[in-house]
Image (cartoon, rainbow, N blue to C red; front, side, top):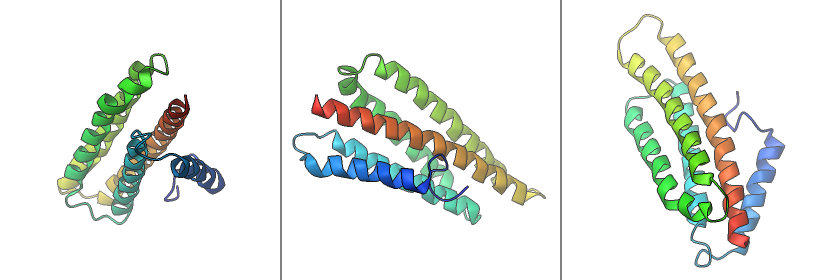
Length: 159
């Protein structure tokens, strides 16, 4: 797996980012405060990329706290954004809540390996490999989910 979204080719990822950037340039934030949500997603992606890089370089001293902060931010987005989105897309709150629960379970796997790494073990390199693998799965899942959210939010802003 490379450092980007493992589910998309570099070309597809660039095109998706350009589409979102084009939309952002055409809409003033005053007219669409929901765009703050898109900025949050960019920051979230950056944090996940950083977490994976730290795992790959085996330097994870204070990362459990950072992971927990990411989960709290993700849960806040449900209450802030999805109630407005639910007015335009039927059952979106229920569907996204289920997807966010799955994301929490994936974070649980990451926490498991972080906790395992805190206990002295003989085969620590295997634990780091498992951690990097779990973070990669988490990245793929979250990137797809956030792209879907951004597209639905952008469509709702034009309705």
